Image (cartoon, rainbow, N blue to C red; front, side):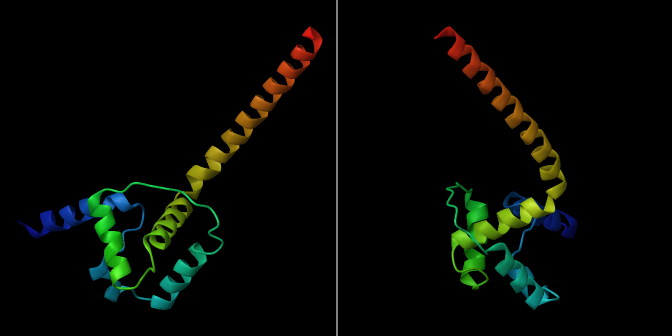
Length: 123
């Protein structure tokens, strides 16, 4: 297999995790380990919400590798970090969506209010 194909295959295998794909073999190449540690700690603050997710075998294997080399303490911690980083990396998208969601919430409230007034008149 050519070097370019190997590199592309490695990227394809990694892309499912999200915007960041930290492979165990890449960890020694991190330029600023302290910055990475601070990034992980910041992302893991205030994790009071619980979600459940399903992962494919390849993504789980990569997360487990990071746990094995003690980058993360658990699958939950790793998943929280990657979700946080993915949301941060796509903040432009979330800014756009948030505006639309607020408009939708207002319209729903207006519809509920209108229905409440109609129901009161009918009674």
